[in-house]
Amino acid sequence: MRILFLPNWRVFRTRADRQRADYYEPGSPYWFFEHFADRPEVAVLDAARWAGWRLEERYLHFYLVQGIVAIFAARRADVVLVHGAQSAVVLLAAKRICPKALPPIVVVDVGTLNGGRPERWDFAVARWAFSACSAIIWHARVSSKIVAEHAPELVKRGVFVPFGIDEREYPVAESYDGDYAVCVGYARRDWSTLFSAWESLDGLPLLLVGAPSRVAERLPVGVRVVPPVSFSEYIRLVREARLVVLPVEDGRASWGQMTLLQTMIMGRPVVVTDAAPVRDYTRRGVEAVPPGDAPALAAAVRATWQDREMRARLGREARDAVLTGYRERDMARCIEEVLRDASTCRTSQ
Image 1 (cartoon, helix red, strand yellow):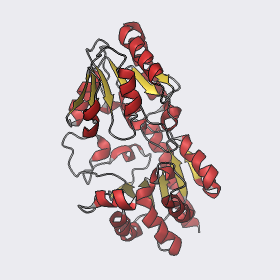
Image 2 (cartoon, one colour; image 1 turned 90 degrees about the vertical axis):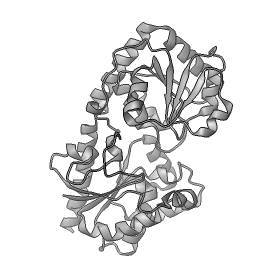
Image 3 (cartoon, helix red, strand yellow; image 1 turned 30 degrees about the vertical axis):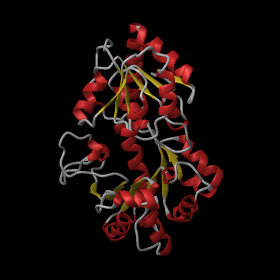
Image 4 (cartoon, one colour; image 1 turned 180 degrees about the vertical axis):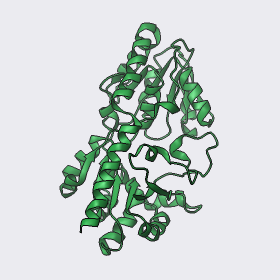
């Protein structure tokens, strides 16, 4: 099977201390595709097709150049897998206009085009274009709910596939006695709730890894922003932390699962907001608190910080939860089945 993969992020051509989703060395298996039962031929066409791709993201809310290039590249593929509607909308529009000119297109998470806000114009554009897709893969059930409400004709094309992590990339940490907590992530973090909670924690040390520089203007006592770090340094900071705090922002689209599962597979005790985008992954192995509830977040952090036995239990349960329910291999095999069904439908027509 020949697959054209369109990720809505930048993919480098060398490893250079990056996580597997962020680099692709031609000739070697890329990311989760290595777990396919039948090894596919994968071509990666990322969003960074030109220097101004961030301008497209900001002002157009989709990737025009990537989509135009994909129209020509897709003709050499049996099926196209697109991660994020931002990268899919141009290609899907072309397929809707000329349906037989392009192969089947499968898209991960339609809700990511507009963050689950159907009142915006780009939801209407996505709805029109997505009538040409063969299947939609959701990593968060909340994405399917927003589509069911505002584009019900697309629901029958969707399937929920839990996100998965490869445990080989994330060594388990066995210590629970670090002298700091860590918060990981750049986008979709509820900084207001986190900082309100921390103001009542008497200066407990917290490192913000990956946080935008703007948050440094209003940090509570004990909180410090860590400059950008390499992937290996990120792993070290998480493994040596006493606990992880993930104030995932609530919403109706998909975000936050990768970071949550990365920290869980390393056996870290995690305090996370039970926000809709990650609710499918917070049923066990973590200390979950209601989104937007600063007192509850502070209480959970304080209890976890003070109780070593609790931290050890959470760490063990977190890793077990990933190994039994959220492995990259399982995600890959589910996606392979969706892609195979889509490409089979094409050949049978």
